[in-house]
Length: 349
Image (tube, rainbow, N blue to C red):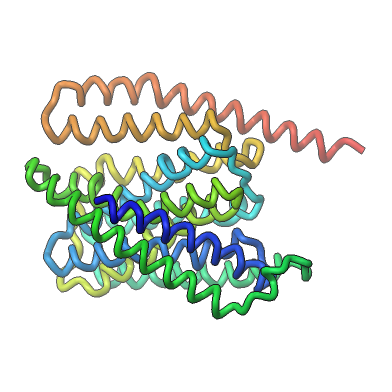
């Protein structure tokens, strides 16, 4: 376990350093590298686990881990990163990537409505991923930076790519070590496949994203910290689920509980990013604490509902009638205030 954590931190540090060098070498914003290379690399453990689970006929783990990972990435990874340093959010994320992440979440929800994901659904998801990558490529050309005097700009790009591959290898192996230990403990506790996928597997496969974003935040690379999370979610939803559904021997089954609760929560968490990011184009420490509190409530509800504890009904009542209305009112207020502030700026001479 300790060796896995050490490799996780070392691999994340190497990935962030290489991403910053590659962004300088290619003269693009670090956000683009975070949304693509770093996000794709940190999503590799999720791809490996989902494929292994599918081939072993454990569809609930394959689908549940992607749903749980998407929720964890936003609420925990962004929440902890914002506690380290308030995260600056670019306008591109608010205008393009966040709406696309919400659209990807909605697309998965719609395709899974019949309680399965077929090969055709997998092809639809992969086609959406290709479209997203094409949009990113176009965006990178428009956001190319002028040559700078940064000495890392002259670093050969192949060395940066080799550093990324080495960091990725560390992350994948570390995730494998931690995942094996976590699943063994969860199985001994008698948890269901759906809960193992939503919690233990999802958290374990999200550790590379968590480590990468936390290291990026500590190093002041806030665009990489945010871009890694949004990009990873898009790769997980479109790429991992797409490839998994495509190679699965039979259609991936989606449990009714996932349709009734987990997928709506995933969609709601994705939608939550839009007003939070739009209000000031940053994620503050207070909003980071809000994210962490929401994940704690979600985790408690999942565990208590699965184990049949009376706490489940009370938590659901509290969330539906107190927390969610207060959260919606708060987000509407902050979004309206941000819109008015920006509207006044445009009107002022």
